[in-house]
Figure 1 (cartoon, helix red, strand yellow):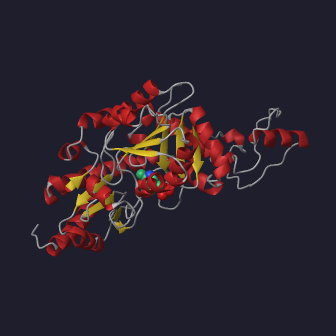
Figure 2 (figure 1 turned 45 degrees about the vertical axis):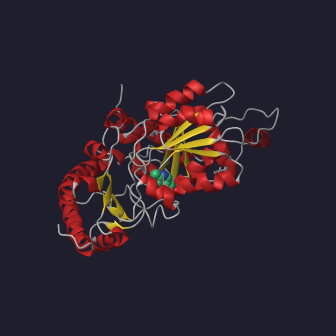
Figure 3 (figure 1 turned 60 degrees about the horizontal axis):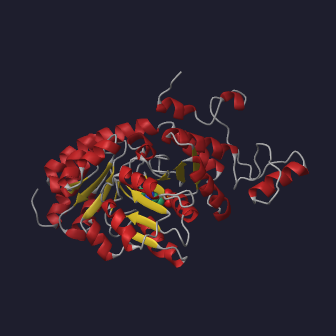
Length: 418
Ligand SMILES: Cc1ncc(COP(=O)(O)O)c(C=O)c1O
């Protein structure tokens, strides 16, 4: 029987016959696993370390940094959501991103990225990777791929890295452009891997692998986890691409722990229901915000706002199922107005992070993107008046009332009338 995505993802990674017919999977906190004999133990360990002539070990677990039944189950669930060949889970989104970037770049394979990006990723690319001898090149737009190759004297990248829609300013990138370019310029001995951070929309609303990406990255702390009660990351994609990332994970050590993996697997069962409700409430809220604040004050990955932002809506139509539940709002009065707005909110919680059951609000310029250089903030639209909203599961009318009263407070501070 051909099953829909939601049905496949619900049961991925576990059958009741695996564990006493329990309807839900057990949690295996074990850090280590018993070898049936010394020869098998040696085969496992020598294979893990790539020792020449190692005997092929049977299926089985060794030590939970390398693999764990609960982690495997949750990884299969993420792979099911993405329809990917394999997935790897990590202790945070940054662990997934940094490990993947390290795995597929080296001195001869620079990282090319298109900004803007989440502040932590931007810092890792601009400060940490170069300090380790990796070359990193920023492109303003994906249509600069050919000219960048020429400017780099023909030196091809190892990775083309995108985030779409971008956190927090909602610029969108055409994934297919990166995928087609990478395929054209890859050779057997030099693979160009396209990585897409899909945290903002998640696998229900956007499917980068179907658009030509090789790997999708997630802060699973956000929509996949969805309840502000865990920190995790995910990397999902072609089996050989994920295999190398898992090898690096083994030695960098950023794997997820079994308890968090179990919680994440549980959360992924309700992913589509949460996202659909958040998406619907966002539609209602956006309409109100456009009327109250003026359309030019509102940013989102919804078509009406993308048009206003000068983005190519056909790209969104092609690669996004919907516009998601993240909103950017330009509040009058600069930082003072934005802070007044945030401090006045009563339903939205003033906190970083996103994609949770509760609605969240924050000030990117001084919070999530505090470390982004001023010129990059100016170029990408992270102004002092800009606030980021993540729409949760509260009643949409309460959210509308909340932003309305907070906007009035901010408008007073900015000496404006609503
Ligand atoms: C788009 C995006 N990618 C990656 C991350 C990093 O994830 P984590 O905080 O789980 O390490 C974040 C965190 O806010 C994010 O918003």
